[in-house]
Length: 34
Image 1 (spheres, rainbow, N blue to C red):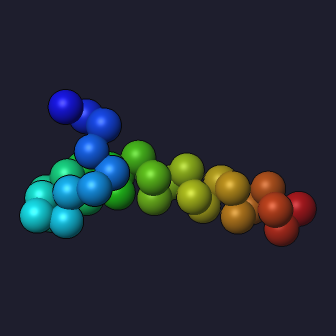
Image 2: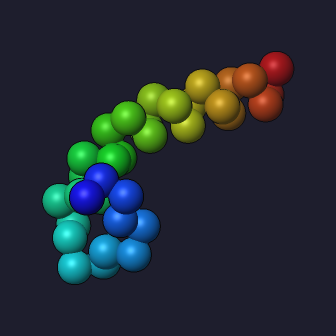
Image 3: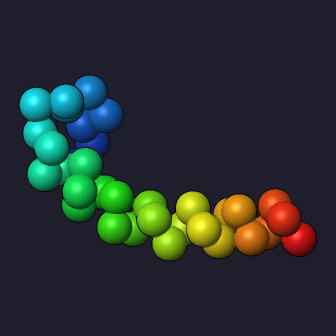
């Protein structure tokens, strides 16, 4: 149920997954910059 990579009809799922991915992505960029 949580594993739905192919779900463009569910914009809410993108928002929910965007919350934990936003800070995580920043950390990755910082590590890469370092």
